[in-house]
Length: 280
Ligand SMILES: [Zn+2]
Image (cartoon, rainbow, N blue to C red; front, side, top):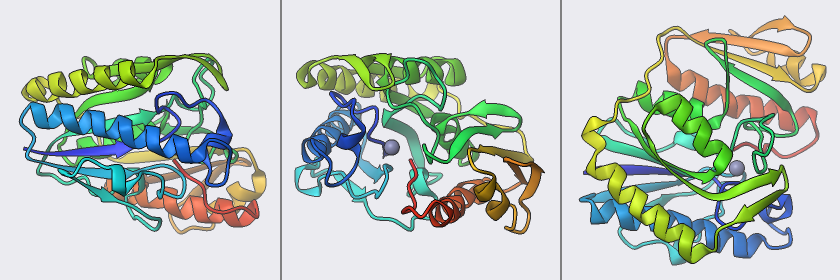
C-alpha cells in the first residue's frame, strides 16, 4: 500500500507567526522541526495501518523546510522548487491515499490561522468550476483526477471544517483553534502528534470506504488578484482570459495544467511584485 503526503507549514502544530514560515525568520528552524514531527506522526500511523511506502512532498514556500535528517526512515522526501505539480508533486495513480498535513484554511476565512490561498499577498480568491476554493480543494481535486482519495487532513480547526465540508467523512485533526489570523489556542506537540498518528492509522484502515474527490471536466480555474498589474501579466499566457480588471480564468480538460499554471502564476506574480515566487 503506497501512500502520499503533502505537507504544508501554516497548519503545523504550534505555529502561528508568519516569521516562523520563512527561512531566516524568528522561530523558523524550530518550525521546520515541528513540521517534520507532524509529518512523521502521520507516516507512523500510516505504517501501523499497513502502508508499505510513503512519499512526503514539502509543499510550503521554498519547499525546503522539512528536515530530511529527522524524517521517518521509511519515507522519502520530495524537496526543492520547480516542481511542475507543486503541492501535489509525486502523487501517482497507484497511491491508495493522500494525506494533507499542516494545511490551512482558504483566503478570507475568519479565525483561519494564517489563512490564504497559494500566494497570500497576491491572490484575493481562487475559484474552481465557479466555486470559491482553497489549497485543500485544489490539491484534493488533483488527487481525485488521479483517482486517489484524501484520507487525512491536519491543521487548524478552520481547515478541518473546510475539509469535512468538501470531502465528507475524511479524518481530520485540529492541532490548533484560531482566535485570529495570527493567534490560536494550541495543543502541545506530544498531544497533537499522537492524535495525528491515531487518525492516520484510522484513515488508512478505512480507506476502501473513501471516495476520490472528482470534479466534472472541463476544469475552470478563476483567480481574483489583488493587483491589476499581475492580472494583466497573467492574462498574457495563451489560454488565460481576462474576465475583469483583477480577474483571470483558464479552462482545460487536463487538471495537470491547472497545477502547472499555479507555478507560472507564481513566477509572474513574483516578477511583478518584485518578490520571489511564493506559493503554498
Ligand atoms: Zn504554506
